[in-house]
Length: 193
Image (cartoon, rainbow, N blue to C red):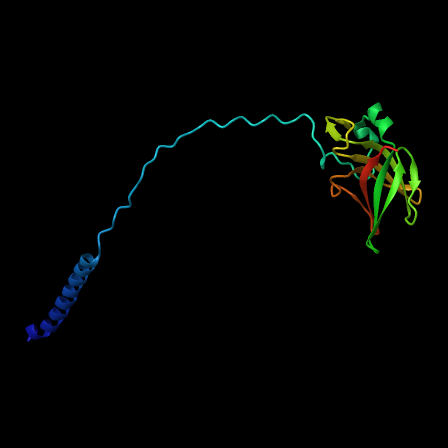
């Protein structure tokens, strides 16, 4: 009687064991052996890199880190205008943009003089004009007398009080331009007469 009771239990153990062995054999027999990836070895060649060119001693505009918009002291930098430049360039042409009307007009301002800009609350004084602006160390000057990089140091007054002082660049009008609620002022060029 004891044998009859154990037989179903032995049968269950036998079946489970058989299935476990059969499954593990079928899994291993159906799996394909893994291929080893082909490896290619190549020799790396190293070539020496050329040394970078030395930085120039002087830089042209846009000299964003050198710009001094707002009321900065004139003693921050020494502006040197050669006599040849002073004798050649007498005026500058400025473009006055009115925001509301989206119109622009040209105004001629003599270098070294304060000029009232009609139709605006401004007076403009052109302090310096440099036909080829350059800066080295603490000196602002011109490389030569050709208008390759024209710039003008301008001071703007409203109701008699200075409100802005900075360099305007003809070729780089977006570099720290004069911004006002109603107006924009840009340098167009230097004039010889």
